[in-house]
Length: 351
Image 1 (cartoon, rainbow, N blue to C red):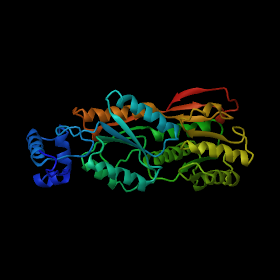
Image 2 (tube, helix red, strand yellow; image 1 turned 30 degrees about the vertical axis):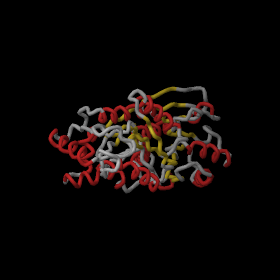
Image 3 (cartoon, one colour; image 1 turned 180 degrees about the vertical axis):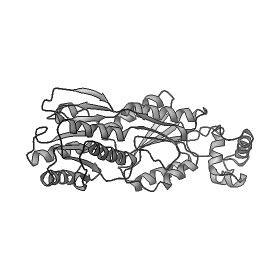
Image 4 (cartoon, helix red, strand yellow; image 1 turned 90 degrees about the horizontal axis):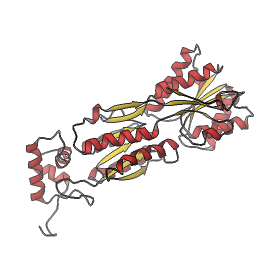
């Protein structure tokens, strides 16, 4: 064929064969759930009609870019930086490139990014959804286009595919029980606005632990901050400390720890004497804060590693059904000074 021959895209190829674009994509990737007869039919038509997927295509029979996408809310969070290291520990061995996309926790940005992938720019997607994502049509559209998706940390249960998470309900439950055991009687949950399952699970675990401890959770014990570090978060927490006067806080995301420490300082509360704090975070500075911070430490590296392994198992045409793969890895409660009168006692407890 010479260069002047008209080329067609996947949509035109699907129309010519009266097949869906998802079937075309899977057939060209030699997916196990497409019959051999259909694969031959699609490949022959692709040859005949001069189908070219995109600029990243490496050959007619594979149409692989040897690239995966990692879509995450932010990079500053210690959890996500560790998860990326876990992903790249697998991707590098597979000779794949990993492109990192930041949604900045925005649904609109997330949807725009995923829409770019429908043309076949990447072979697969590893994703942690934005906290503002409620409508999942953009994720379903990408999946229907034949791009395999594996969620890690923040999953999306409406989409039938693999996920690698930690047990957020039990993590929050046990962290709250720890505060109760330390003598806290008026405990508040400081969280962020959002719809993703991890925040709902942490809220539910917190509520159930209070009830199990004979404490009635009140609306005033829940504070919703912006989903990024800001002066507004410090103000909201400071006002809450003055008005509700909690003696314990469970923080659901990393950036809230800085806001909570600053707010406590502004209202002249001593940690842990006046108020005790536990935070979901993997930040390496937790041991050197004053006092050192008790944390729910998630297996970030392992979660990224396992998510990548599942995706590459699928891409290598092994007989794996992503929608049946749901891994839950345990987190650790790391007890430090913010929940104890002494800052030098430290122990690990598997949640």
